[in-house]
Image 1 (cartoon, one colour):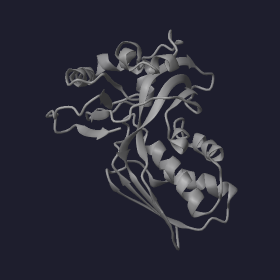
Image 2: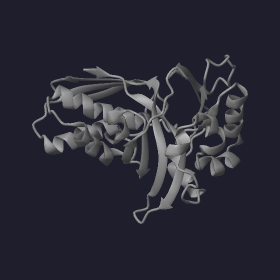
Image 3: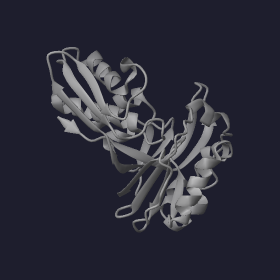
Image 4: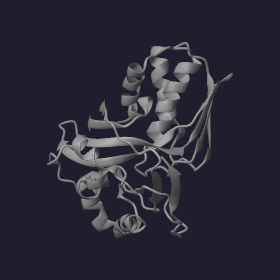
Length: 268
């Protein structure tokens, strides 16, 4: 069985409170976007995990796909071995949720492959154990997320036929670094209300991480400005970066970016 885990972007991201467990409460809108990995899982004589495409750093045992399999095997200990192949297109550490998407799609694939007949709410519970935004990719439709990102409500966001441009420079922003410069506070305006009117997004739809990260990495602010100069009606950093995205009513004119940048353009 094969599936195509997609990336996501954040429309607005507020850090609303520091929690006693060390995490932060957030409020954001997550939207799926048409940049995909490819994931294949088939029955095998022994469990094997291999990859192609963008190199994945770290130890194999720490990969979220294998952690997803481990979670399932805790409750279904007679699951047969599988061969898992991941072709990686979504850059990592980019604020695009690629690793979370791979894990969530793996849960869905294995649910079908093993005929477990688990409903989405059950899969979302498993996914939430793997990462704060993993559960989003089970239903994979626009959601407003609060708490650590695992409490979600559907929201209407019409981006059909809009054009998306993703630009990621070779800058890595660690989660600890991203949160270190943020002062949590409740947003002044309701996110769901702002999302209803795209004409106010540029002035009212904010990513709190930009306030602390842009002064440290002015290259990111310059990319955001370039996206607006190209005609984007909205541009922002996704998650804690370092990907910037622009949304356009029409296909943007090609621009020559730095050769070290990851650049993707697609229709929503």
